[in-house]
Image (cartoon, helix red, strand yellow):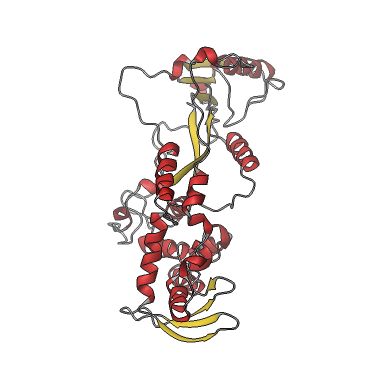
Length: 392
């Protein structure tokens, strides 16, 4: 952010509130540094100034581009597996400063939130650094695995393929990107209230998962148990090349060695097999968060309508409409920045025409070739040219 107390200080990525302050900062910088500049381009979108000796080969350039504001939203998943909005903010630009301000304010309102990585974004960075479909699939299976044994098996497969990938993944704290060690208002409120009126105890989506676990429990084998301590052993059913594993269930601690009971707060198929054999009531072990009453409580606080503008309380500031942001009667350009999540898996199975490896083409082949190399295009500016961005 540009500081008016130090107007001559300019840096790459600096944000200016408006174009007038940008021009003022450039003039002060030019006077203090005794650097004569020539304005080459000045529009509502771009401001560009170059050294007046550019015809002699000087590559110094200052360029600023207009950045539009954006809406940032934070959402979560409610007890019924649906999206629940938590917070939103309108920011003038996307920068480290605005991100830190947004996240710090969010932490004040959600102090007990559990911080985890978005696995899709982690995979996007992973694809950009290591473009290989086999590694992508193994990384996703490792991130979504419930059991530590299977997680280590996937990570060992990754290490065998590429030790660098294994080191990169293990460099991130496991508890923020893996599962094996983890722990619309009016409409949804009305629907949940109707379920309560009918005497339904649990939400439908969690109960569908619970019924699936119950069907699987019939195929498992109940081996032995310690009734005094509530510890049981269950052997899983054989399905193809999977199964025939021994899982330990601790009824008192609400724990199963498969990890699903701890993660989802719902008895897994192994625990349900034990309850069926011993005669315990299965629904008593389902967490309260899946109850209809808890779901109704989530949506009990309604959004208050704004009403007519002349009833609004006086605001401590003056609201001015920025005409540059008004939609015009034309086709709007898409401003979404594409990343690795927008790239399909088919591009990672294409083979290079030179080395026959996946993940790149002839143009970016590390072994060289007819179109290999990374020579800059004719007329491209040097890498030391500063690029000042942002004014609204």
